[in-house]
Image (cartoon, rainbow, N blue to C red; front, side):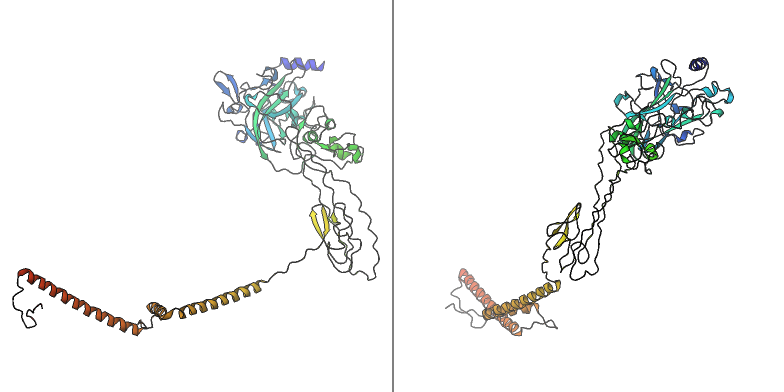
Length: 551
């Protein structure tokens, strides 16, 4: 009866109960809208021929026909199918990071449970449903939205309670009474752990559940997901840091049967919506102690309430193996000579991995197995200090040659003979000691090189001297002549004076021979000339300048 009255009441009044998303990444004041703090915009909408609009091209809350009921949308999913983000102007889509807390902004449009200013409906204004869906974007933007993201207005403690003035859910509009039509309302979500890429979102708000079809308004927008935002350790609930989660209404964490799905979802039951799910290390949660349920996945707050300590979530890993008591210390045989300063060394266990298992977007992420079992400590009773050290008397209760002296399953960490050599991070073995090869010092090498060099220099000098001595006087003379051309005394003179005198005499004889040959040639020429002229019978002169007989 009450729902019928409400239906008649709101269908007959002029209350504008429709709304739309104005900003997809709002980072301004949550009391009053700041247009310059909007860093993401919805898809544009084609209002008419050559008339494409975007909400932020006008003042906040001004209706341009963006408020579309889901049943009236072009494809039954979104209010617009335009895939050109800039069709209405410079209104780009948002860019998110994994783990980022994003704030969406929308106008109140007179729809807040409040009695101020004679608000029609007062505290009985309904708010049935407010959700956000996320899917991988595809060309043409024709998408079926099936994956719901944990959204603040739907989480436990943040939903509106019918008949109360609580400013929760869709009605989180703190300054509603100052401007009932255009007051700012906000809601938050945390970006889930998805691969980089373009994603499409669908915001949906249901006003009157009693109508047929349901009065569910929708706004679709796109955003790029790139990189990660540094966050503290993932909390138990959606708003306590870490990555975002998906949710299925009405289903609890106990309905998830695989680790990947458990780690990427939150509980969807009314009293636990938004509580992060945890995987009970592959076992039923009640096997971990306490009185947990016989399920492999439960909400973290539920596990904490029931004293269950071993579980794994998207932000932390508590699936450590149970502690195993070390084996008893072996009996040591008495020796004749008492051991001096016995040393007991304990092998440190390997730390277990605390890396969270990040599920993939397609639900096929890797399952992180149980951490490696630690190396448990065992006593060492060898004679003298570290692993495989010491000599002399045999070490009792140590591993024999080629036996295991450390690592997983080792009963001791010393060797009766040889030395303990690490074969792998998990096994060490007693092996014979390697013989040290005698080395030659650097000083010895340098001395040998120097002696060899000096010997070679002496031998070379002797060979040169012998070659010079056996080559004859001509060779020695030539050698000294060669030296005299390059070696001078301090006054710049040559040392071989005898050689210089001999060259001088030879030079003088050469000039005399040259003059003599010159005179003979001129006499012969003269005689030929006289014969040619017929003067051969003329008398000769007797003086030095006279002609003489040819006979």
